[in-house]
Structure formats: structure tokens, C-alpha cells
Length: 301
Length: 51
Image 1 (cartoon, each protein chain N blue to C red):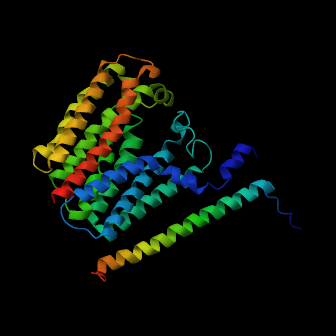
Image 2: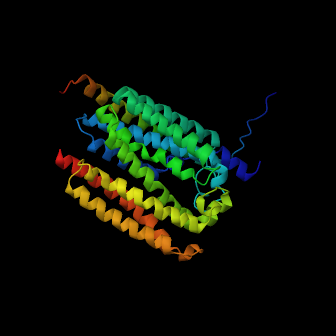
């Protein structure tokens, strides 16, 4: 028996199970869900609210686990992901699958029993959408993978909203739309300077399939409807001046950074400073936008 | 006549396995206690015992 083969049989550390859940992605999911929950009209018991956010976090963890279970071979080919528990050989693949399925069933079940079955249904659909539609179907087959797959990441504020109100109205759909339109510029900025990694793994990201010029055009193009969707809650009178001013300012900065990406002609990752700046700012953008929206709605209420 | 047990692991590996199992058990214990408290609080919130 080789050393490598014996390592596989070693029980994984609990930290590896934690890493399977993609904690950094989970933090953004939890944050947007919490903002959706806080922005919703009506009251919810703090314990039930905590349970709803916990279930959304566990559902996001299930998505991360199932994604890493399916993509273990692909992750091994990319420097960014090669040290994850499965490609690094620290965990049995079946354990990741069982962990992911268990988390998914547990989170949906508790959400249904403790919160309401609409939010549980939305959570179940978002897990299905990310794990099956995005990870297994779209990601390895089309350069539009993150456009349609972005819907999975856009569900958390809708689920948070549904946890409070028990229904889904236009405003949570608008929150969904903001994240849905934010996802392509965010991921394609990353895909531009990680093009070599994605190419080595055989993932058909837009820069690898259609080229960098088309990707930059698309990033700039998507930034406009995203900015429009971000400002729309203020225009429709669903938020106050605080969010209105912040959404215009933040979206303005986003558009300027997207414009710089559009102008850039660099093909080497080292010269892609505008792309790296846009990627970093896009995370801050979503955090600030949703935080201010929730705060504004709470103050207004 | 039975064969003596032949563990595929060295003494160091066995110690590491035990250490990992113990750490996982501790985390699982904390998670279960946390869930028990959460389920109790959910029940209290649903029933409305404390208003």
C-alpha cells in the first residue's frame, strides 16, 4: 500500500469539512439573506430569524460541499483550488457527498418546520439549482454558465424575505435581480485574470471561449442594467435618500471601474489591474449596497 | 489458529487517527448541544411561552 493510498483512508479533520462549505462564499450568502430578512416588512421572532439565517448558511454549505464533490478532478488542475480537501487527498469523496446531502436535507427540513415551507421550498430549489443546474449541467458546458448559474446566488435575500412575510413580492425579486446582474461582471473580472487556470481545468469560461475583448464588452454591458436595478428601489419609493444616494455613488464607481476594464487591452494577468480592482470592489459594492438597503428600510420603517 | 491482527497503520498514524477522531467527536458534541438548545428555543418561540 502506498503512502498516498493510506492518506486517503485517514479520517478527515473537522476543519476539512468546514472548508468544504466554502466559508467565504457562505459569509456573502448569509449577509445578503440577513439583509433581505431585515428589509422585509413585518415582524419575526429573533430565534426564528436566527434559525432562518442558520438554515440558509447550512444550505450554502451544502452547495459548496456538493460542488467540491463533483468538481474534485477539476479543482486538482487549478492552483487556486488544488489545496481543497478532496484534490489534496485529505478526504474521501463519498464523505463530501454524504456531508453535502445531509446538510441540504437538514437545512431544508428545519427551515420548513421552524420558519415556513415557502422559504424551505425556495432554499431547496436554490440548492438544486446550484448543485445540479449550475455545477453539473451549465458550468462544464457553456460560457454562459455564470449568467444563468448566478440565479442560485441571488436567492438568499428572497429566502430571507420569505422567512418574514411568507410570500414573495416585487421588492425581493428586485433584490434577486441586482445579484443576478452583478454576478457576470464579478465573475468575468475574475475569469479574465484567472484565464490560464480555467483553461487548464477545461472550464469554458467566457474569456477562454469567446476571448478577452468580448468578455470586457460583456462586463461593461452588464454593469448598466445592474446599476439601474440597484437604483430602482429608490426610484420606486421603496427606500429613502440614504440608500438612493449610496446606490448612485457606488454604482457610479462600479461603472467607472467597468469602463477601465473595457478600455484595457492587456492579455497578461499581471497587467490586469483594472480587472483585479473591479473584482475586489464588486464584493465591497454588494456588501455596502445590501447593508445600506436594510439599514435604510429599518430606519424608514 | 488465528492470525495476529496486522494494522495497516504505523503507531504514529494510529495516534493521528485517534487525535482526529477525538477532535471530530468534540465538534460533533458541541454541534449537538447547540442544536438541542436551538430546538428548545424554537419550541418556546413557536408556543409563545415567553410572549
